[in-house]
Amino acid sequence: FNLDKTPKVILENMLSSIAGHLIYSNGQFKLRPAVYETPSVTLSEEHIRSGITLNTRISKKELFNAVKGLYSEPDNNYQPQDYPILTNSTFETEDNSERIFGEFNFPMTTSSHTVQRLAKIQLLKARQQISFSAEFNLKAFELDIGDTVQITNSRLGFTNKTFEITNWAFAMAGQSDAPVPTIACEFRETASSVYDFSTSDYSTVSSGKATNLPSATTVSAPSGLTLTDELVQY
Image (cartoon, helix red, strand yellow):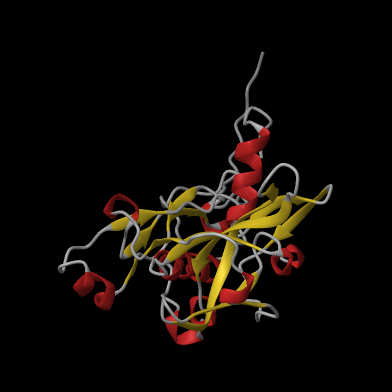
């Protein structure tokens, strides 16, 4: 990377290569790559200490059913080029047969196989649309941003439904003379299938060479030389 970019942009470009995010918690930076983690905590009605704010769909401007973008191909001298467009006919049908692109660039990914897996994760994550927020008792204190958790709520019809924590905050609620510690959490649904991938999903990527010009770093040996002599008198 070049230092003319801000640290924020450099970090975002690095994180794109693992489809992950960086969080700051308990005085430490933590790197969370795009890997499904089996939930070890379940939150239910007995742990909730507030009302629930629920969204069942994301806005249309955030929705997409196909993915395109750029990555750096070694065979193209690491110059940016398009990776294979990823589409999903099922998602297109859900969106009234309209193809909507989401653009994701992977400037620090040099493997065509890796970039296709990253693109698929972005597409499938976007289709996990249910999100909600609520305050919980200290049962949620052991959780952190990026953790997966199972939610059970009979009113919402959730039975051990898997969510990922997208925001977490500690607060003291209640009367000033008797404050009660609570944990405010925001969740987005997820599933292990978001991270599934098989070799049959790969698309073939061409060598990516943009021209047929000779390499600037290789000099061919001279050929077709002839020798002639000439007598010159002064």
